[in-house]
Image (tube, rainbow, N blue to C red; front, side):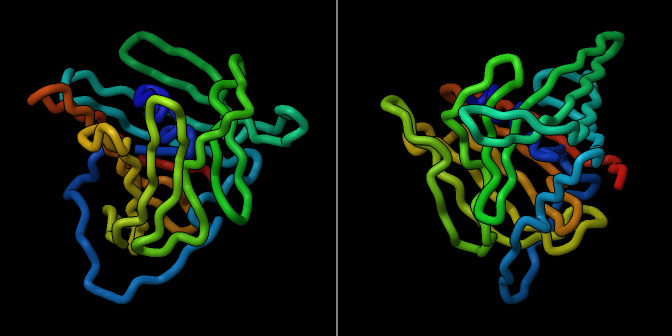
Length: 206
């Protein structure tokens, strides 16, 4: 499940690596944010640098808003994903839907499902919560934690997604106004062993 979340977070403009000097929490009154924190005009693209605590290898991912398709009568956006890791290059697509109320993920274009995951709920307000997915075996919840500076991006909303039954497994991502996802941190805890996957936005085209 968290492997899926890692992929969607990348797809959210989805997205990525610990920023050069980390994040600085802002000591200021909270504001609210809408879909301007997840721009998705067709043709927009985002490039990310990816790393993991389990390897020294660095990878690159580029996401491009690439037209639309339909799932059960619902229009969703296609995101082209180009991954470069060493000499290996792969291309795939993932599906998202962006509205004034939320951003949902409909898994990959090759295996679509109408059981969407609500990754972002608008408006973004510190303290707001929502159910990401609710299954018989697991429920995940999203929470807006704070506003922080991420590198050159100011007043980013920090969102945490966590499994209610496995709180040690989390996804944190930072949303910048008129940019989208600026950073993603995925943490997996297995027993006493913690591993992390990090991503940092290094460029965008729009």
